[in-house]
Image (cartoon, rainbow, N blue to C red; front, side, top):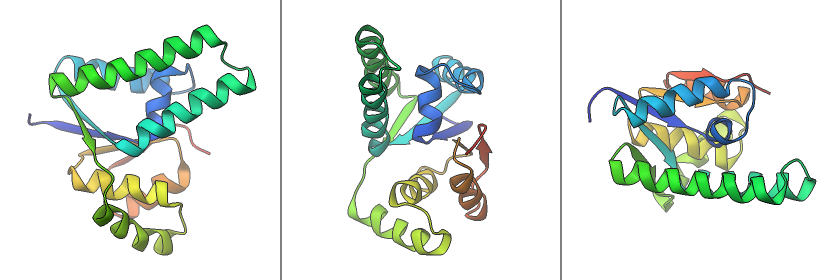
Length: 153
């Protein structure tokens, strides 16, 4: 597939499933992927991170058990569906990517998970990068990614 390649970090992925500020932007990206206009990418790391946030919201009571099961099932089903349709590339977490990320940890004073997002996006030659994390956004820009901030902490 040619055209737009959009890398989503966990904070961006979560906006698809948890109604939040800027969710409509991520919704449009997903619709474009369903139409075959965009290829999505994210790391295997993000799958676990998203599941962890869903679980945290369940434990804190901001998601009831029924909504938790629905959101978790919808997320995993969509990952599977997009992979089968060929519009999602899941970047594996391996030692070479982690080692590349170490340089960014020291350069930008960011977490390993955030550095992994940048090196993963570069690995798939993402034309766009989406995050709601301001520090990650700034580091991504400095690393030459076309980063888009969705709100931002």
